[in-house]
Image (cartoon, rainbow over all chains, first blue to last red; front, side, top):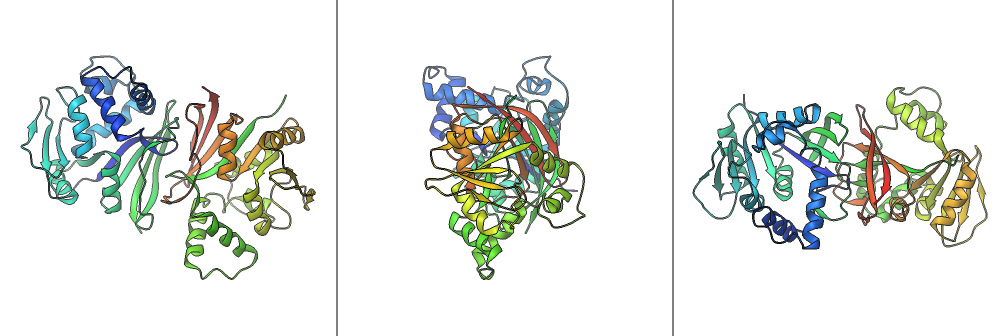
Length: 226
Length: 226
């Protein structure tokens, strides 16, 4: 049986999956690997908002484990959800911009531990990282990338990892089976909106689960074609 | 002890509290009182989306009761939440546009059953409706309207009833103590965004409750000043 295609993101209450502009995001991500912009107020603000958005995940045992930060961390429902999301994923698909940002900020042992298919316009040889993550570069469209990811995932699910624009392309193409949004108690006012440009006539949602935790609310929907 | 100032709205998963444009909303509302635009595709679409947004409330016993539709209707947590929101409210505040739309579409026995303070730029004598709703028109600003509503509400709470732009004015002025959002499983793609123009540097949120029901997710936050 083939797996599902899903995405799972943290979203602000006003609908953003990233604060600020893409340019600020790039500078902030560079900061992780090459410090030097920390005094830039816009970058500091971006990082504070980004940390707020993902505040539910940093204390978790799974998060620490997966990034090789060692033992310890919180257990409980948030942790179970993070772990289940990881374990169901047999392969990931991501956009080129997310890859470019991540290439500069992921640790050497990238946190996917599965094949990752990067939707791009340029060719590049596969890039294999320690710990089981191999990035494959697909330059013939989102459906081709998904086909390769399905093949690699086998019985497990394919995660559309991001960023927001790539996720929306898959949503509007009718290729998402279900998705999870962790709604964080923050307002950004500006940034990248997850559903900016969604085609509401193509997408009907069926709520599957809503699970509150002390730090966020986990919402899961199935996507039905209209 | 003075009551709280709150708002309570239904919001689409992509952050809209109303679909389409204000002009379409006005035509759709007119439809309730003066049928004739039902064949207009834009109005039909607006009404379908508006019904989807509020689908959780129409089957409820409280909803039927409050609008005088007679006995029957569903009980349960959704119904309790709708009733509690009504019962805590000692007075409401609304913007002029919401009043103008409602004036044409509310039943004779308007559904507030308390004083309602309308923020406007023009004077008008109070308008008393059967069933306990009296509309007062306040033309010296949102704080004056809130002061009068607090006075009228006594120990009970003041609800900022809407529309979206009026609610946001109160949020950005730091005058909201807490709010509830019923997140409906719909995507609009366009319309009135609840938090468009929010000042994220003024508003910090503390999650108080998240309650899933089969039809929607009820989220309640306290607002803390940063």
